[in-house]
Image (cartoon, rainbow, N blue to C red; front, top):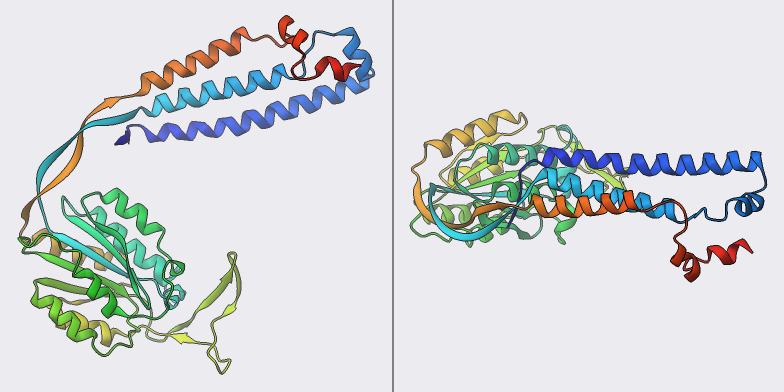
Length: 348
């Protein structure tokens, strides 16, 4: 398991494309100046030992040296031992609605991005609690199994989008059924399911499924995103706006938040409904509820004894830089005889 100690140094990698651009500019300038001074074939004859390949080779070697030097600065570390540790926390599963209606822009930047912000900020406020993520539309899919790795949760969350679910719709009961498989610790007394949606659910049995889940000890909270006045659903192709979604009659579809559905699910799940149009409100409410919940002890495996690996990258960097210093721009005698790059042939 790798860990990066100083990721900020990765910004130094931006110097590499800058150096390539400068090199190409200088190469173009030299060619242009040489043409003004004399004929190129004549110049090759007056300077027969000049190599056209060596400068490029030196640049590649130099940039490789710089790259490995930067990697050594970020100091990659490797976990050499996997050990079992005991932690205290609760289990929190987020069910994120990724149906097309969540692309509506009545809440900036759109409902889906607002939902992601709420989940991400809530995760950031959790302690040693375990988290899992479900995405759903017409069907539900596990995006991330329950884990203590909050960084991984945030990373997977950013990739969630409607294209990940083959069937469109808003079947919340599908997410509720899948959530049952997430809570793998029967001794955990505090288990939370947080549903983030606009509430456009068309399944009559959703409340009953929520009640069954609550009877198994899972508290269900719902967070509503969107306005009750509604908004059209933008359609995009390759990132460009091509219009709004229309029904079979050719009329523009207006999607609205349905708080009644979300409140009904929350009541059946022994939780509560929270307005999610202002990010900080649901984050504060859920963080407070989870923080005040009774914590149970559980075991988890994690890497320990992380050892520095920067010395390997530093050694490779120094090797490349030394080669760059020892490599001259002129043709190498033995390489000239081999004529590997057809430099002598091209001269004739």
